[in-house]
Each structure stands twice: as C-alpha cells, then as structure tokens.
Amino acid sequence: MRTVENETLVYDLSSHDTLCLDQTLSTVWSHCDGTRSVDDLGQLIAPSEGTATRRDLTWIALEQLRAKGLLLDGTLGDASVNRFHGLSRREMIRQAGVIGVLVPTLLTMAAAPASSAASLVCDCSAATGLDARPQGCACTSNNDCCGVCIGGVSCGPTSNIGTHAACCPPPP
Amino acid sequence: MGEVCFDRAATIRVFGTPVALRASNDALLQRMLDVSPPLWRPSTARRVARTYELRASGDVDEALAAYAADVKMFIAERSPQRVFVHAGVVAFDDRAIVIPGKSFSGKTTLVRALLDAGATYYSDEYAVLDRRGRVHPYPQPLGVRTEDKRRQIATAVSSRIGTRPIPIALVLLTEHRAGSKWRATRLSPARAVLEVSQHTLPFMRDPARSLDVLSAALAPATTLRGTRGDASDAVRAILRLRKAFAR
Image 1: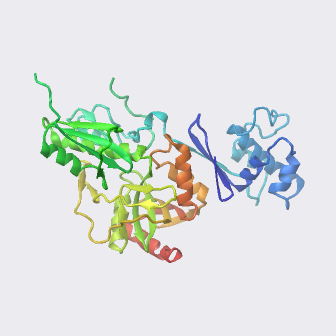
Image 2: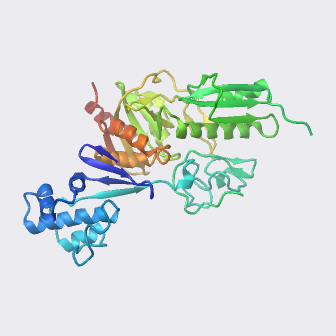
Image 3: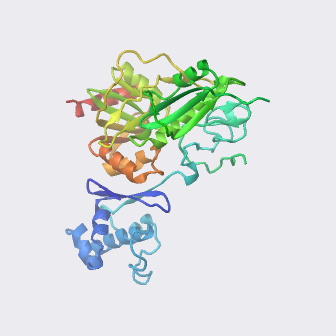
C-alpha cells in the first residue's frame, strides 16, 4: 500500500490487481477503525451535503471497499442493512440518485497474469501478424510471432507486455 | 560426436546484474558483447544471475537476436538497482518526457519527432528509474521495424544523447490513432502510477519496490492520457506544455 498525494494505491498479492482509491475512499478506508458510524464517516467526506446524501456517498464508498476485500468480512452486513450490497458503482449511483456530487471512485487495474512474469507474453487477439504468439509457440514465419520466429520453428522472446487470453500453449 | 567447447567467456554487469557469456570463438563472443544491453561493464563476479552460451553453427544471426532480446528483458525484470518501464524517453532542459507503451505503439516515431524538435535522446525502449524517481539513459540506437517486424538498428542518434539521470516532467499515456487530434486529460499522480504500472516490467515480481519508485517518479510529474494523431501534431502540443516545466 502506498499513499500518493491524498490517494491510496493498494496491490493485492493474491489477485495481482492494483487498486487506486481516490481521496474520498482513502479517507473512508483510513477511518474504518471499528469506532466510527456511517454518519461519522459521512461527516468526514461530505460535511456540506445533506444527511441522506452523506449516508449514500458513505455507503457507496464502503461497498466499493467491501467488494475489493478491503474491509473485514461481515463488517457491512448483508443487503438488509447495506442496500448497495453487490451493486456496481454505476448501479449504486443510479439507485442513490446522487447528481452533481463527486462520487467516490475505486479504480482497478489487473496486472498481467502470473505466468507472464517473464514479460514474454503478448496480446494474442490476432491469429497472425503483430502481437500474435508468445515465446515458445510453434511458428513458420515472423508474422506468427510477437517476436521473431527462430529457425522457422519456435517464437522467440518479445518485449511486449500484455494479456494472452488467446495464446497458444508453450511447447512441452 | 564431440563436445562443444565454449572456451571464450566474459562476464558483464548490466544495471547491477552480472551475466556470463560463453562462446565457441572470439568473434562470436565479440558479437554477443556488441548486442548486449547498453552501458554494460566488464565484471569479475563469480556468481552470475544467468549464463548464455552460443556456438557458431546454424543461424548465428537468429541466435544472437534471441540472446539480445532475452538478456535485455532479463535485465529489465531483475535489475536490483533500477525499475524498468517500457517507454520512450527524451528530455528538454534536463527534464524528461516519458512515453510508456509496448512495441508497435508508435513511441519510437514520437521519440524521433521530438528529437527532430531539439530534444535530447534517452531511450526508445525503457525508462530506467532509480529509487529517487529519476530516469537514467538507456541509449540503445533507435530501432526501426522492417516489413517482417524485425528490429533493425538505425543509424545512431546524432549529437544530443543524455548522460545523466534527470527527473521526469511529463508522462504521455497517449494512444496513436491515425487521423485523430491531440486530446489529453491530466491524471492524478496515483492514477498515473496505476496506468504506468502496466508497463513496468518488474511490477509483479516486486510490487513494493515498483510502487515506491513509480510514486517517487510520478508524484512531481504531469501525466496526460488521451489520443494523438500524427507525430508533428503531438510535438506541437508537447512543446506548448514545455513552458510548464522549464527551469
């Protein structure tokens, strides 16, 4: 976890996602110490808003934190207590009807898969051509590979970084 | 069948990582050194992180290309001294402009255009960051892509090549779209770290150090995300921004 100018970056070691909490979410998260109520948190993040809007904004923040595993299990209760339970941010905003108010934002960036720790993975959305097969895949020409087709047999390494959902498996 | 004798050897240190090279003759060893990452130095280290062995049979050019690509990425992922970001880097007034992007994203084209506009060359492959967030030179010759996607080394960049580490003033997360105009919005430093982490080679292996270095590098910088059209249009926009970070 790192704080960068009032925002917070969190790297999840299990999912390899990187999360970015904006200033509001960072404030809520840092004050979730088990002693503060939803109203207490609302006063911190939106003191000039009405009670209902403050509560909605706070619950939107809390639900985003819960969904990403940043709160202890069971903290928020189920849907009978937390009316935003399980909703996307867009759905929460729609349900809350908060207009003209800055809604807390949690951004997620998925890291490249663990198998690509060697950074030898490329975007395999195309069967051939640029960003095709990663290192180790069978090939007949350079057009089959992200890098070079070595010996007309096997794709060599590449400096591309990306996902490889459609990549062929490496040779045994 | 006799054994292959690798009786020509050298150990080099690249950004803090010792690598051993072994070849079947002097000429091949020299060729390996010629294509090794920039700024390598001879080393007497006995323990190395990796050993590469090449012998003079078959397609030597292919083997050298494979060695060059592999050692470059190995160092970029494992350097204990630096955090490598896949990016082009130029400088104006001792302040760096970093252009993250993978291969074929157009960053080399933009680097070339900025050099033509008077920038100093730092790299068209990696932004090499230290723990203070400064970017170091990685002065490999500018590459061009041939039709079969091989990277050919262009003639060396003339005159202005960076030699010392400098802070980052501007980060451009702009995607090239043919026919589009320059359009960019500013990101907060934390958002900038989030985006640039996708281009950071050691990030999954060492997220803590990567986050530290990226935060140090990007907190004082201006990061823009958006689209750009042709390189000349982007250069004009960048030069207008230059006033924001001139001394």
